[in-house]
Image (tube, rainbow, N blue to C red; front, side, top):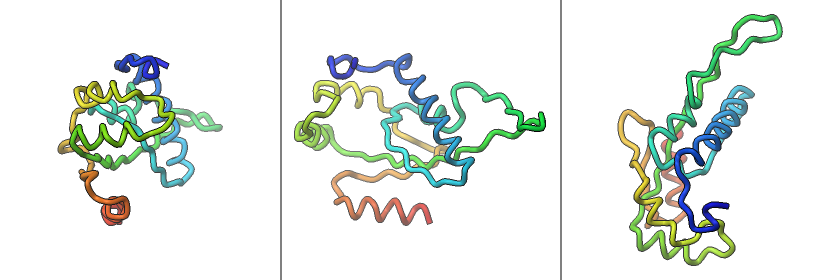
Amino acid sequence: MKMQKGIPLNDEDRIPWLCKLHDVLRRDVASGQHVVLACSALKKVYRDILIQGKDDAPLKCDDSGKEEKPVEVKLLVVHLTGSFDIISGRLLRRKDHFMPPELLQSQFDTLETPSAPESFIQINVDKNLSEIIATIMETLK
């Protein structure tokens, strides 16, 4: 709702949502699923939350009362890069999108580009979709 009103989100807005996404990732990984999650985890701390949760998660107990080790979430960040002009043009062509184009600059301002030791690949959005998908799939092999 904030974004629809043209108000950029802050950490207080994003962190609870990221914690929920972490819980979904952990649940799905624990059940043996491979997961693709698309979101704008703009800061390193946001990506860390997706992997670890907000705080060190307490050990959970199974039905017998024994403590279980938390499921490890391994994350490969696919960092799509592009110029402000290209991304702005694409955003302007979207119909009925929740984020007004006026907020794009705040996204660029907040962005912390992934770097080592994070697990990531960087792909320019100038490539066509099939090239982007092929690069991602090759990295996952």
